[in-house]
Image (tube, rainbow, N blue to C red; front, top):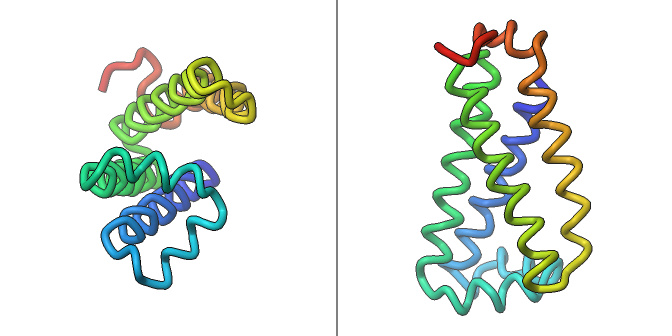
Amino acid sequence: MALSAFFVIGAVVAAATSLALLFPDSPLAQLWRLNPQARAGFARMGPWAAVLMGSVAVACASTARGLWSLTWWGQRLAIALLVVNLIGNAANAVIRGDLRTLIGVPIAGGLIAYLLSSPVRGAFGTSNLHP
């Protein structure tokens, strides 16, 4: 349940970011005060940034639903998104030199390990990772 909530929060944040990119003069533009570097990075991507963040929102919402329902695809989607997040955090630390992103590596790794543990695989009916 907590992991499902984690992905709901991710969906809300990604959707808000997408909307802030689509409507730069809206009240959502205040979000950029939290991370002005992100706004600059998204600006370099052009309109694709809003599409990307919208896709992340849909992926997170789908994952939350799949986890909540204890479906095998929800577990797999969660693992896939966490792997992408882990790689992104590590890449940001190496390429951009932003060592703060390294905090996400053990968190994502721990969540992946949790999702791959025997009791959790059993709860999702994927003890051998086949549906």
